[in-house]
Length: 75
Image (cartoon, rainbow, N blue to C red; front, side, top):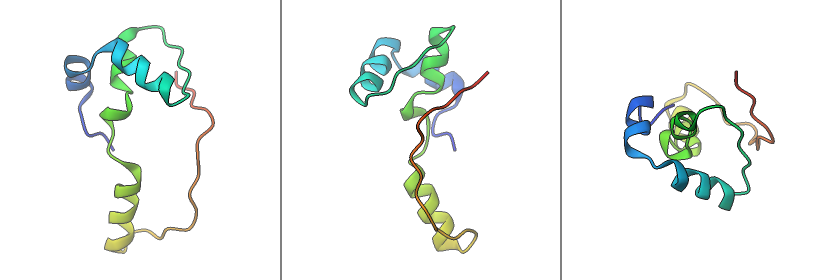
């Protein structure tokens, strides 16, 4: 889930800072518009491990495997 709305992400995050952080993490990104970089920045989303643990503890899901994405294509 989102931690920041798309509008807040565009207002609060810096394009170059986000690109630098993604580069440090070994993530390559190709986008048509710089605003999309801020909207999809890692800081814009909740920590997935925390979300999964909360759902597991609440009994609404069961942890079974952890996956690591190798690519994301949007559009």
